[in-house]
Length: 392
Ligand code: ATP
Ligand code: MG
Image 1 (spheres, protein in one colour):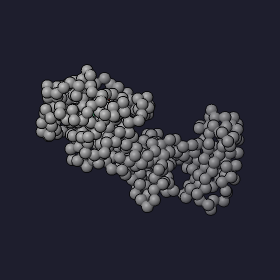
Image 2: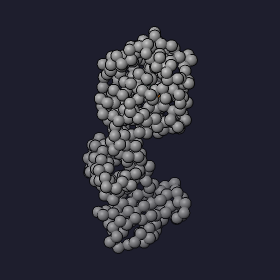
Image 3: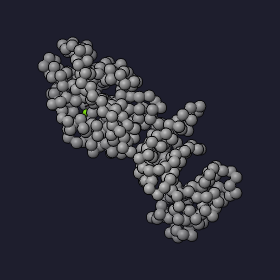
Image 4: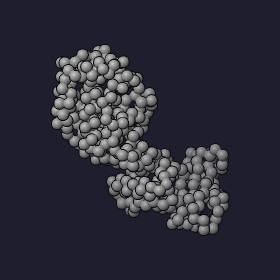
């Protein structure tokens, strides 16, 4: 018996003329991911991408998880392949499904017949398959309204497929269909989640990390690269740019009022991010800010930093509370890495009493104590770029 994956499209079924483009992208990405798991063929038909192992060495379990992390796929089904006749469909159902039905009390069968020449109609297929399963799973009862399990028989173009339900996919849109964004990636919990959320909307990610060696460590940098790798398992491989803020931070501490340190630093970050975005062809900045979470994320503080941005700043976590952000961080597997205790450049030289309702003109007054553009250029000259290859 052969088991395959049926990957069902998400939002792209709503696309009109350019649907083909989206489908090609999904199939291409699935092919790319499949290469890590052995010999598979990938093709699409009828709002579904078929991923079929070609030999016994292909790792279907691994591919199943990788497909579930692909944006643009709403659901993934593991299905057994049968020939297009009732004898084969029933025999396949009887060998493949009992494992799924163990521990379930009630079930129903749904049939979908996209090949209308198939001799039985859907109700007849359901009836026969239901009877066959009852005969070998005597603990089951049929419940068409609230079944514990729904078994599906799909009669399609070249074969029939039998399965016991769809697993949730990543949803969203294929990465790359909505431009490229520069993710300001720190070692915290929020920014990896923010990147993941925008990648889900089809944004290809490139990352920018600010460090402040010796105040921040090599391990802090490695943690950020690791986080990029974890996000890349969903969004695809990405470049991580690293820029040093050491000199800027030291000068801020010597020359500016303490209560403005963080705000000034964040304006430098934005200005440098503008330049990196321009160099790398990114059309938006992405941050993990959440309204009111810390002093630099009040509405007034966000306005002060936003003032420096030359691109739209996407802040997908803005309306989320920490608990909700943590929930996503756990689901996408970044949480455990995010909570490793390495310092971030924002947490060195933090003011004891940061301004929570800053006035832009006062911030600019402080900013003018230092040669802003020159310091940004110097910081940019420290830029290093790391290519983080996704391990699916
Ligand atoms: P996170 O959990 O993402 O670190 P946070 O709650 O700690 O966020 P801040 O430290 O104020 O909040 O940072 C707000 C946002 O600014 C981050 O989500 C991130 O997008 C960006 N940011 C902060 N520090 C850095 C850094 N060292 N490098 C790059 N971006 C940063
Ligand atoms: Mg942080």
